[in-house]
Amino acid sequence: MAELLNALLKLLQGSALGEAVRSAEYLYPALEASHILGIAVLVGPAFTFDLRLLGVGRHVVSVTSAARNLLPVSHVGFAIAVITGIALLSAQATVIAGTGAAPWKLGLLILACLNVLVFHGGVYRRVNDWADASITPVAARIGAGVSLTAWTGVIFTGRLLAYT
Image (cartoon, rainbow, N blue to C red; front, side, top):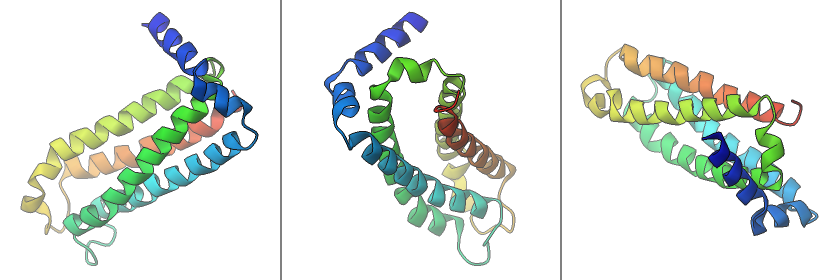
């Protein structure tokens, strides 16, 4: 498995994308800035939704309304962050993968994505049963806590990639 991952990283790093990111004068900083904006567009609405699941603003906005208005924006941010993240990784994929923070970032990113799938495939499928409840179900609150923790960890470990 490690050999396959290393081969994929070398392939990405040696690709035309990797070469372009390394050699174009302003491409790397433009990608970094775009990546940060993508993260903001992802995490801002996601955290707002998570806080709503935890009870913040329950008298102001329904869970379904919050989901309908916030989550599509978060999906756009996720797409931007993934695309720019892959492009940034391509510049030095083998070096970045060798840092101490890389396995943590990947693990937390996988956890965050799995949490989304479990939440939407599980407790949120029955949202109409609990949308008007004064307290959201325990599973929804746990999902919100995992989301807040995992995405925060992704951000922190992403910054640590440059220093470990």
